[in-house]
Amino acid sequence: MKNRNGATIKNTYMTIYQKLKKRGHAPKTFILDNEVSDTLVNAFEQNNLVYQKVPPHNKRTNAAERAIQTWKAHFIAGLSTTDPLFPISEWDRLIYQGQVTLNLLRNSRMNPKLSAHAYLSNACQTR
Image 1 (tube, rainbow, N blue to C red):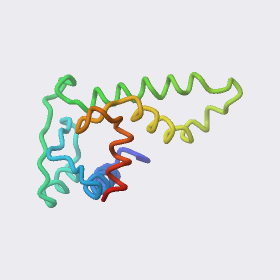
Image 2: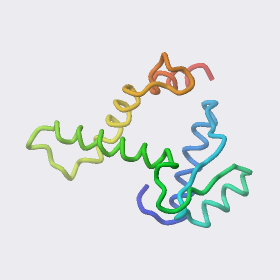
Image 3: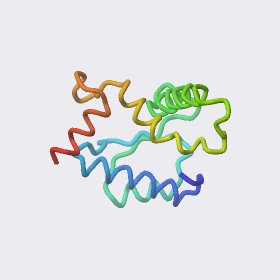
Image 4: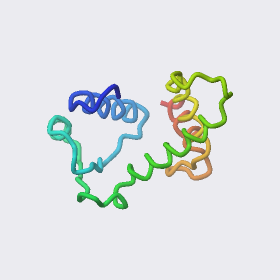
């Protein structure tokens, strides 16, 4: 996301939702923190998507908060392995690689014998 504007957040959520839906893995319920924008809530209601708001200051009940912590730790670890002369201003070029490597390390929830990356890749090929 380029910014935390309500419209940008809504567009990002809906883009990801459409990609997952196309692959046959659309989320059944969205768990949101209490700082969610009205624009996003309206989009969920217009598209008949189920959502829940997490109580304030209770990050344990929001799996997304834990996923964000995991992503940050993984990405920072990846940045720390770059060449010392790597221009830090180019950090955004490493996002795709970080996403792929993290998903290679995690098991799929739908088929624990596969990595999350393999599961989503196979689902793309079969649909």
